[in-house]
Image 1 (cartoon, rainbow, N blue to C red):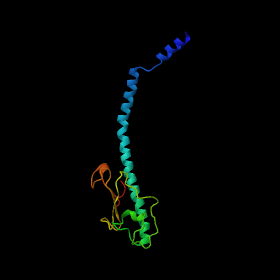
Image 2 (image 1 turned 60 degrees about the horizontal axis):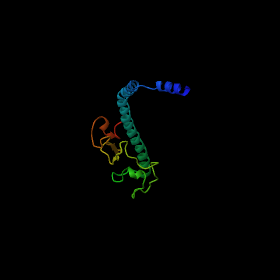
Image 3 (image 1 turned 60 degrees about the vertical axis):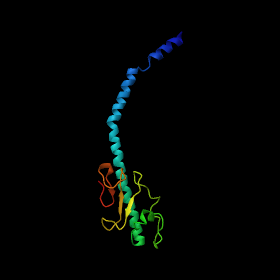
Image 4 (image 1 turned 135 degrees about the vertical axis):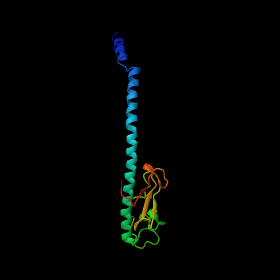
Amino acid sequence: MKQTATRRKRGQAGVTLIEMLVVVTIIGLFVALVGPRLWQNVDKAKITAAHAQIQGFMGALGTYKLDNGNFPTTEQGLRALRERPADATEWNGPYMPQEIPKDPWGHDWIYKFPGDHGDEPDIVSYAADGQPGGDGINADIVSWKSTQ
């Protein structure tokens, strides 16, 4: 008899369907309000990471230039920071501690020397869309402009 009474009390202590719907609705509203802000922060973080990678490349390229007298050519690209080019007689690399990474969106970096924007190489990420130009998350990240 005592077991039956205990089972009834446990059954009454359960959660009703209405209570579950209220909780699910509150969670849904929370996700709808907070979710977009989280995605904006992810996009900003990728842009910041791209600028940081460019700064890392520029530092390594500066060391390369000190050793070799010039920056790698467009054909040699950023690979010259990891692998000795055939014509680099004073190469003292590798100048990067690991392989050349892709940009934060998974695209290859665009490297050009001589560059079109001064005496240093041009390094470009085409950002989220992988295409030149664009606005917002699709705006190119470039070495010749300072961080935003």
